[in-house]
Image (cartoon, rainbow over all chains, first blue to last red; front, top):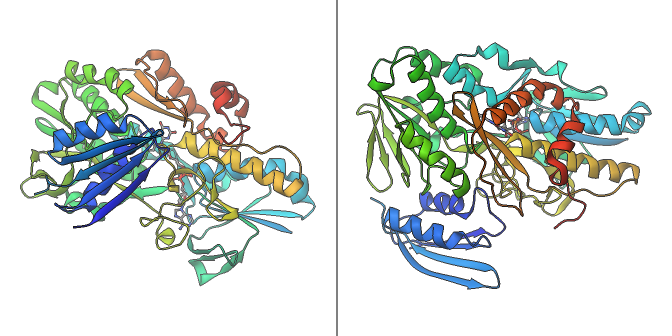
Length: 77
Length: 400
Ligand SMILES: Cc1cc2nc3c(=O)[nH]c(=O)nc-3n(C[C@H](O)[C@H](O)[C@H](O)COP(=O)(O)OP(=O)(O)OC[C@H]3O[C@@H](n4cnc5c(N)ncnc54)[C@H](O)[C@@H]3O)c2cc1C
């Protein structure tokens, strides 16, 4: 199992979801992706993405305008 | 003599050197400053026109201009690609005769290009409108033979240049088929790894209804893993399948080879720069602009243009000791054709999110004006128009 730290702070358009998708391509099932962002859209976007791809949203945290979204990769064939 | 090296003579490279050469013309005449572009290409192409070539049959020749006609007075060109950039020792190594050039300042604007190696099977199956004008024209030749079946367009991988271009391909393919009375026999499917048809919500709100209206099917969160050209199937990382008869997908893009493995680029070779003043991390005499950077904004010509002006201004300031420092605002402005002479724009900055702009004939006309003035703008003309158009987003006087 590998942890992929993705720093998307300061990204708004095309947004942290771009970095998440790029990290997902390199990850394997069981890996953890930790996505850090300042764009508040990262939380609903990651939730929607996890729901639609069937990957697991482990947690979301907010601290002084910085968001940390943790995702476990589970949906790859 | 102060030597300024520009690696890459595309959109960003030409705009930046034209501004530098006009502002430093006296210093160049006096032999105090030299500006040299390094780029193997003998012709440049109007890249946004690739879509017109692919879906409307514009001849590739119409998109090309000899580089020597575009170089500003006082700027030299070495027609050779850079094979290595040693920032610590201020040296560029070129392919031809493995020559070495030294510099005081360097700007990297080497763009990006399709990377088919990331997606097995894609190269054999696909035709794209990113590689060059001639390759784009193959799509039009194929379109003319289509009588029925399924065209698949969309995003095969990230990142890529000009975020709206895959959506434009869907709308322009639809327009072509309707105009030729073939739409009832040909399906169009748009695939994307994003959760929406266009990733920025305000633009998605505008185009999603158009997809339904035009009967363009969409498959969101489709992460292309590989393509099976024999079965004519695209297979996702999650094991889903989309069938195609004709494939015009947007491949993931890569930066120039010589950047990979350097300490100033990330692990894929995108150059790490300060997103406001574009200096390469830890090197205040080195800069990168345009598609090759890792900054969090779209890979588009408008960015290359505005970033280039910021870098040129700040370099002139370093050389002459006069003026004030400028910063890039993150301004993006990509046109998105929605077919039948209408277009919207994806407009935003680092601080202002993308706005909802409805497709209109006026926007389409604005896009056409930009096309008309493109080559002249690379030579530094019409800057008053850009300044007027971008207003406070043209540059910032403060870093935030
Ligand atoms: C289909 C399509 C539609 C587009 N639509 C729009 C739009 O509507 N609006 C918009 O703003 N932008 C648009 N763009 C994007 C725009 O064309 C690019 O973002 C812009 O050209 C980037 O400028 P650049 O200087 O970074 O790279 P480029 O213009 O690509 O120039 C890079 C140059 O570097 C050279 N080079 C590469 N490697 C080396 C090396 N090792 N040594 C020396 N030289 C090297 C290349 O030969 C090239 O000349 C579109 C692009 C495409 C493909």
